[in-house]
Length: 548
Image 1 (tube, helix red, strand yellow):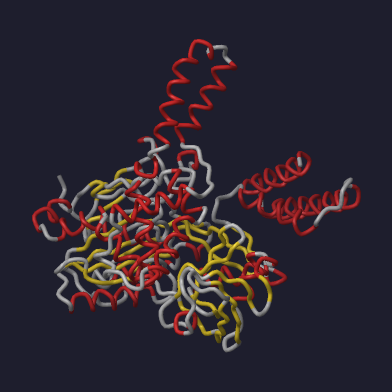
Image 2 (cartoon, rainbow, N blue to C red):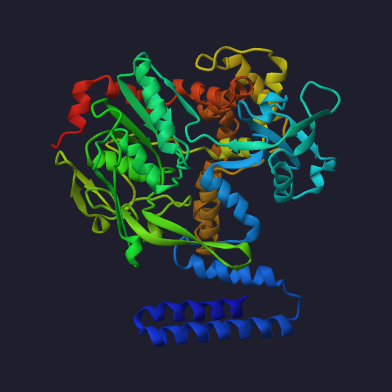
């Protein structure tokens, strides 16, 4: 491993140095280093003590090289191209079902309304046992996905186990073209406020948002909430189209700048807007990235919307896909993008990012001030800062464990098997007695976890032993350990709000699918509640968009 690392480092450093060399010498250095790499691989393959997998070894080299550039320049092997295409187009040949592996089980977590999975009787909570007669336990996740998806018009047979039904159920489906909607939900969240959830920026995202806004206005909406939370981005021109709904024709939306002339492009709105006056609130969080940040940042720059939530992810880079030999591809970062004020939300100092890659705290020295149309000060240097900050709750370790182990999912399946109907999604709530039932049920399951405090305490204990302070600190450490043990006994109630919300979402999805899962959360959603308040208060809305 050390030798491979050194070899790859030499290649990387050599390629880095090429940017400072004349073209002729540059091409020679490229050829030389490729020759060195090929010779090295040949010797390793011939002489290394164990058999090496050439595909795996070369892939490690490719990934390490590209990783030294940025997290978004990636190699896409032939067997990964279809998945990549689905992510970019939002469509594939299949039955319209989403599955998840829990332990050694493959379970159905969502069925899309109107597609074969839904119309032919597949249900959320079903465990898929066999696919075309092949036991799923004998397949990898990738192999199972390949079986589920396929050519349009072909059939697939599933054998599923369903809660409350003794014998397995056999179902057959004909694959169709499945198009995952960019707007999984739109509707009225109050008497006069419309809500549009935008999950992706695949083709037709702008058209879908436009249709949703027009429809909501026809229902009496006098304000619009555009929810971009956890939207990872996508097609840049769809971000332009969405901004165009609220901005006039001919407005600059985003500028890209890169090394090649083709990378330097200014994008403007091309169509007449839907509404230039209707108040707009844009919701973002640390999962809002790329095209989501273009929309949020552009509407903020023009003072056309109040941005609410958390600082966004901080990805201001543009990628371009290029075909390679053997049907593989490479996705290369070719440019940075800039909002109308000229700010770039990308920060290349990844040391200031959280574990999930999103932007953490940004030193003032890395920030640069810009002014919006109304003269408000906004900053670049990493992510879009909301006009109104509402910090999202950190998901507790216990909540993550319950979700990861499938306990929340399984209990929702059990609940649905015992309740033929429930209240409408917006009204559904688990009673305290029902939550107590979940607590009793989950306590009979086996699971282990350590909270961040317990992990830090363990590290403190080890460090104290190394530095010979442990004997002095032992009474306090033991006391804290006992307090944490007592606290652990109440964790299922300490984090009841988080756990109960996920339970209610999962339960409601069994009856009202994706739409219901969204609606049940409105009653707890602090961002949505704040948006309704702001959009219904003309004075507050205008004051927020006015320079101080």
